[in-house]
Length: 276
Image 1 (cartoon, rainbow, N blue to C red):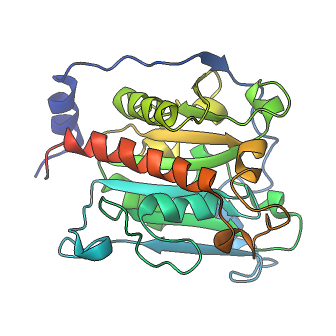
Image 2 (image 1 turned 90 degrees about the horizontal axis):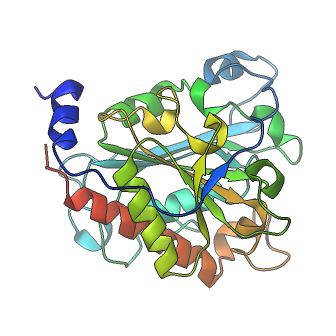
């Protein structure tokens, strides 16, 4: 059996890829969460799954076929820990990056494989922010098992320009996580489609640098984290349709350019990795 130590040694032998882009220091961490973990949230008798919150995920079997009959792979898991009404737009992006249309879960016709995905979603009409559990405390047993069984994890998050330390109105994505190759590929692919990307640094909430962050709980002990500003996410959906019920069926070209860029970065990363 190949363990994490063996995998880390193998990948450490490859030339390191330097981070690119402008370094950005994040502002103070997310306000204190009401729940210290997913386990604590699930144990709250006042919350009802399917009413207050929901969980969606898909794990592909080794012999599963990806979109359009292409072989499925188990090397990358895409997650949205604060989907639904918590960090708007991240659920829809999670599905698109994984290879499925967010409106009906139909396999996308684009080139590439399907990826495993998991998301935790706020389903309330308001006050979904109370359901936020910070990424270092994410202990949902399904997502932990999925991440620990994947070479790569890509986590999608939403942030504000103020928290990101950017000018008001900035449409940008902050690229973090502990995998330098993954970060570089993401930066390059965003540049190719005209999406403003900034290399995140500083506190873990923005930079995703803690080993305990769910994005870094992969087989390699490192992954990538994307923090999209509110303005960037709003611009991905038709005006007046940026609600949990409407977003999936009202995506704009920017949404697909972003998802395609992320999928291209994943494809480049996987091409450098052995099939275990």
